[in-house]
Length: 270
Ligand code: GTP
Ligand code: MG
Image 1: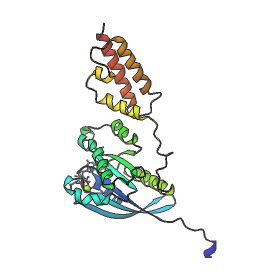
Image 2: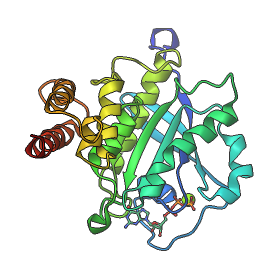
Image 3: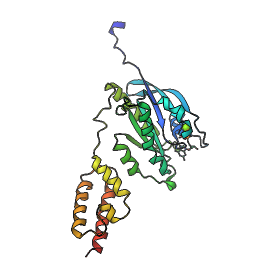
Image 4: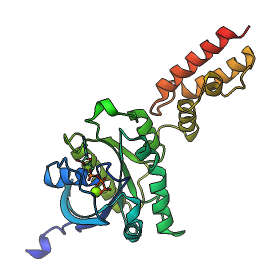
């Protein structure tokens, strides 16, 4: 009878939004997951597309309201009112379009501005989709660069292709289950599952190394520095970035680059 039956867990309703430049594949990622198909022809989203879908996360049925935003700047006025009351954000860039990756910061800034001074971005689950990985020949943002950007902010990161479907189900499952964890945790991002395994100093150093213009710049010494100065700078970076100690994406390449820079500089210093 009624009294004996276990109370079913409260069904959950969540709101997620998509963000990212025009044409990066936001609508296609959602369509791939919800309708299992891909449309090669580009149909720009006008303002916003809204859809409801039910998903299963562990033993729960979740009702998801998806707001698929237009990436074009023209639609700013339409999008801006949809940022509030969001539990999850799908942030998308095209791995063949460096500017769509560089734009991620301004997307976060736009959201932050619309949420206002009392808005809290800490308690929203963000997943970054490095999309169009099927177009390998045109890739201009590699995995470690994207992963570093995402993970240093506590965001999830997935490599996806809406065309082939690669990474899409995995991305949504992890994303939704992180949102359910968040809701169960009283609306706070659970720290354990999202903990970062590297420091901000390590992440910033790797980024700085990637964008350095020459070996001097990479080691952070003035052109014409002495052997001692070069060795000192090298040792500091080696301790910070050694692959045995640094778990940040891209640390191995950055470490190798630093070793090579030091070798090249020492060759030319008497
Ligand atoms: P806006 O709505 O204008 O903001 O763009 P959007 O981000 O929603 O892009 P959309 O999903 O409409 O996709 C843009 C174009 O990229 C379309 O021509 C898609 O077919 C194509 N596209 C999307 N995802 C992929 C992918 O993973 N691989 C390839 N090769 N093409 C893709
Ligand atoms: Mg779209």
